[in-house]
Every structure is written in C-alpha cells, then in structure tokens.
Image (cartoon, rainbow, N blue to C red; front, side, top):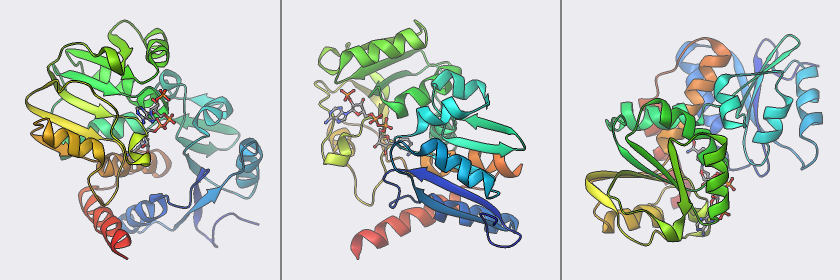
Length: 282
Ligand code: NAP
C-alpha cells in the first residue's frame, strides 16, 4: 500500500505531541502554488518508536518527513546523509527518502534568518545578538546565525551549563552564560528560543539590554503576543515578532529540498496568522 493517495507523493510531520502542528496547512498551500499532487499529514509517534515509524512510512512509499519535538536528535542519528547544517546542529527537522539514502537536513536556522532579513527587513551582519535558550531550537539556529557574521552572539540559558555545552560544540565565536549573568548589552536583537511561553511566562531577562532600533523575536507563535513579546514592548524594542514567519520559512526550505522548487511565503504567513487568530477566537 502507498502512503499517499493514488498518484500523490506522501509526506508527514512526526512528533509527540503533533496534533497542533500547522505544517499540513502550510504544505498544502505550497503544493497548491505549483499544482503538485502531495499528501501531508501529522503523524503522532510514540516515544521509543521513532525508527520503526520512519521505516514503516518509507516502506509504504513515503517521500519525506518533517520531524519535531522530541525526535530531532534521533532523526539526525537515522540520517545516512546528514547535510552540513544538520551535522552542525546535531539535529534534523527534514528527512528526505531518496532510494536507499536517508538525507537529513535542518531548516530551522535558515527559516529564522530568512524571516528576519527578508520578511522583517532586519539585516543581521554586524549585529549584537542575544539568543536566550539552549535547547533544540537554539542549537538549530546558531550555525546559520554565525554564517551571517554578527558582531557578537551571546547564548544565555536558565541552566548555564547547557549554554556552555553549546559553546564547546560550536566555537569561541559565541559567548555563553546563565540568564542570571547576562553581559552588559546593548543588543540589537534578542531571540527567545526558550519554551517559557508555553507556560505563559517570559524567560527572566534581568536587565533590559536593548539598543535603540532593536528587534525582539519569539520563536514561539500564537494568536496573541507572548509574555516575552510583551516584555520586549515594555523594554523599548522597535520591532517585535513571533515565530510564525520562521515556521513558514523553515517549511519552505523543506519543500524546496523535497520538490526542487521554492514556494512564495508572504501570503502563506498572512493566511497562517489569520488561521491562528480564527482558531483562538472559536
Ligand atoms: P527544548 O529543547 O525543550 O528547550 C527548551 C529551552 O527553554 C531550554 O533552553 C530551557 O532551559 C528553556 N526554558 C524552558 N522554560 C523556561 C523558563 N520558564 N524560563 C527560562 N527558560 C526556560 O525546546 P526547543 O525545541 O528548543 O523549542 C523552544 C521553542 O522554540 C518552543 O517554543 C518551540 O515551539 C519554538 N520553535 C519554533 C520554531 C519555529 O519554526 N517557529 C522552530 C523550532 C522551535 P533549561 O535548559 O534551563 O531547561
């Protein structure tokens, strides 16, 4: 049996939980732009079953998968051809099944950089950047952020040792500290890569180290501004954004890897924002 409907290439997003994923909506919009026949659905995977689920999907003819929490490291381990970006991150969010090969890539970082530079018009070269958080999302974006040559990249985490571990993994171009030991800014960009917003909290950023014209960016996305975004407004950020654009941009890069064409993202970001607002007002 094929994983997709007749004649359609099949893709999934695998995670746990995954029911809330917006990726099926985004990829349906992308496929419509090109008239591609694909199916894309959310696949809940039990902890401990990731490898078996990937193999089952491949054996049914599945063409590719996005991977979300908590399986990105396992997806990296499963990749027979990890890209340079994936090796740098040690995590994979895009699997591409290519005959016997399993290509693995990480599109989170390029998604963030594209949203900031192209959609929000905030060039990153020469900037002083504070990245708050040291989990999977932070790990995925550090390489692409370094690639655009910021003046400074400080990684600050609640648990300082995890930030230090990222510094060892990358190189001494990043500084690492606990959230309670923030260096004096000011910063041009503060990125929230923590999951604090999920529990309706802002990470405790003790001072307000923002430079005039600064941008604050929460990788989380929701209909309403997050506590971090509200903190940033109060701290005087000139531009405040959530991660809706990053989500669509990382998906566009996955689509390009799978389908060889790059979707336009602007209208899809707008449509996703409307969809998030509509579902929260119901
Ligand atoms: P993760 O691996 O579980 O890491 C969670 C991070 O948040 C850790 O650094 C943790 O610090 C920190 N944290 C949690 N609660 C905190 C609190 N109350 N105060 C301060 N720090 C706190 O999660 P992840 O995969 O990195 O995801 C992080 C966020 O990025 C999520 O909101 C996710 O939705 C978002 N994300 C968005 C996109 C997108 O496309 N927009 C892509 C990827 C991820 P400790 O180390 O001290 O525990």
